[in-house]
Length: 246
Ligand code: SF4
Image (cartoon, rainbow, N blue to C red; front, side):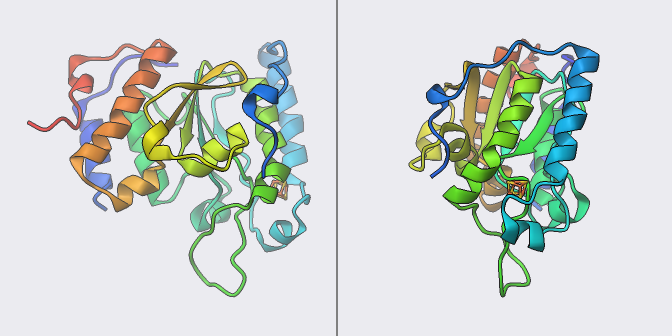
């Protein structure tokens, strides 16, 4: 993973872009298995991807989806971003976080001095939640859908074993921790843990698209500074000052 900080332009681009009953609790989940080395990890990931792409455990979603959105990025990533579920753009392209919120997440990653290929990005639900009778819009995954799909993400985490995880929004936290009472405004910015991996809750990028104040951007950025520190990335003074009021 590249640790060198990138320019303030990345943060500026982020700024301008933004103008535009699940499974048991984390503590009850199995400990991480011993990590696999490079070729074995790649092979195991390929096997897992094949299984997930063929999954029809949620028959209603298997019928309505265009793609199974498995996840994307570096199998040896130190940082894993976890989102909610594919939207229309993701369903169309088969990749997580490629719509407007995804563009913003990419800019956040760039402001951290990284690229999407340095990290791993996945969702707690691999298929787009269906919206019968609607031609647009998204809905939150149900607890049953989350409980059905979360084992796939757990297997991805078993293989990647990131140093740090970031939960993007309420559903990601609920899916990972098996709780349905997440208050993201209160919990963001404070470390918790997922099977021994430090987990930082923060706002979903879609929230920043709806709330574009500097103070909200700064909150997410402060969360990312904590993530960078935990992941052992270098942080420049310029990066520390992103989104501070002058
Ligand atoms: S949402 Fe997950 S569990 Fe359900 S069909 Fe899609 S891949 Fe399978």
